[in-house]
Length: 169
Image 1 (cartoon, rainbow, N blue to C red):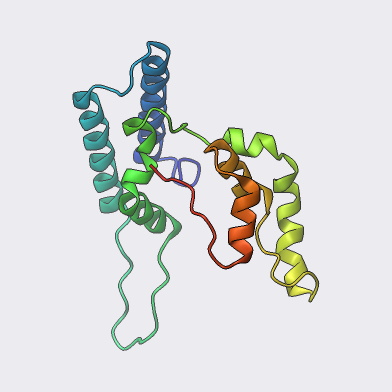
Image 2: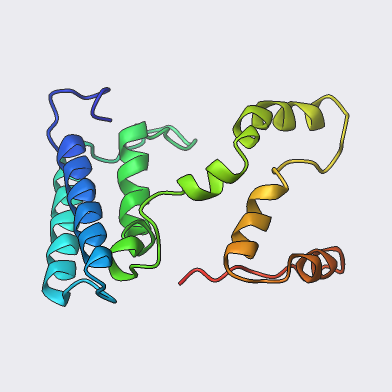
């Protein structure tokens, strides 16, 4: 959004806020803290909410013209802002739980070929090959391994129709 709307300040301000929060969590981890101070967490959440309120005022919801019955397509900026507001706790989880990393580089680094295979995996089912193959199988397994869940047992449960869910907290 910062590149798409260079005159808007909110995208870069949001990037700066998230980078500042990431730096604070790195310092807290290095110092051995179990959590950030509650006032700091509250400040990050307040600033995040304020930025998204500003962003929403600059990218309002598109309204349906009179007489039109179908749904109106929203702008990518509006959709992003709406998702960031709806999933605020998940986006900022790295602030409230220092065990949660800021990014997912660890999971992606473990299986670097997954991104290269993604277009092929999306293409195959449309061409009639490999039905049911839609997601890369190794990335969820990496999450289970990281959370010390027995991968073999997880696969058995998955094929029995009871897939285990990784912890989200």
